[in-house]
Length: 171
Ligand code: FE
Image (cartoon, rainbow, N blue to C red; front, side, top):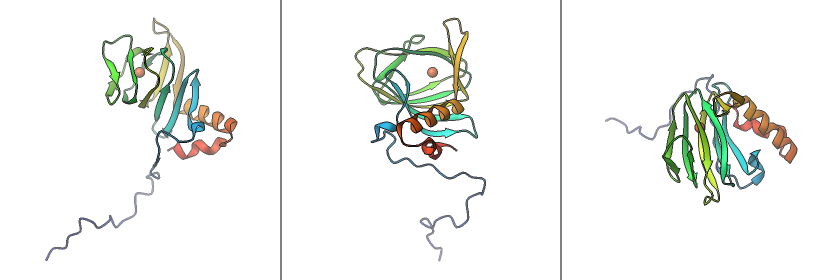
């Protein structure tokens, strides 16, 4: 008679090249110090800083209305709005709480949080690089997973969690 093995764990080791999984119990952290300041009233919370693949997963939190950044994505971005609402000046749709957004490669757009939004939190997966640009597309600066890691290290060192606090998020 065939045995029911539906609850039998996989019996073999994981591939040795496979990095350890990353589990964060509270993506929105209880400890305020985990949020890394990025600009005035703008923070990010690292979740997975994938140095080996060149992308990052983070929560972006904004507590100020206004224009945040004009940027270009050479690669796709995925977003899930956890709280609040935001939009791009270049599009007529609004990213609402509970919504999902796919940002296509090649897009240049300007993120705006409207005045009646007290707090916006969005989970973003950003691949490759974010290029900050002027209205004509001239590059003013950039972010990638390595500048993100660097910002985390400096913040966690300064705030007393230690520069190596960021290491748990790196894969
Ligand atoms: Fe974008």
